Image (cartoon, rainbow, N blue to C red; front, side, top):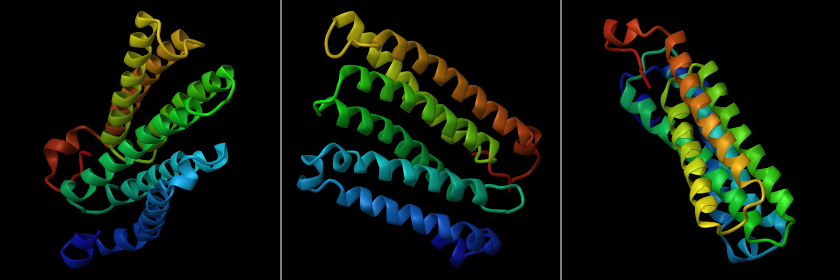
Length: 207
């Protein structure tokens, strides 16, 4: 963002994306604050504040990236790529955090199961949203990687017969399917902007 403000970046895109970027920064600061002992070891709602802020940060960064990488503007890839990676990482981390928070609390195993399923569905939804909004291919691919890791983790748990196995096979299957959908969404999203642009212009952001 500072590069755009101080260089030849697109100033119009900066003014449009700045509010989302500012709110993402605030949300991430609140996420850092949520690691205080009284929140981590507190009630379930306070424990869930960490993944909530991560999710909000991811959504705001996804919107920021969609604006800055729009073909209407001329921002270089090295400005938008870090935002895409950060958005994908915070989404993946929110999935891990919410499931981890429930695992360490005394909640029914079936609740953990359904929240796990819902978090996978949410990640897939974010991947499709990012692709539809023109946010490039990186965010969906990062989420596809995270979902594939979830599927592999569930397989390892099933093979070792360790941990909570309630719904583990279903979680493994939907995570693997969600990973495939996220990959497809990323390819589709990139295709909507035209693959030919990658070779046809040095100013197009492929990410």
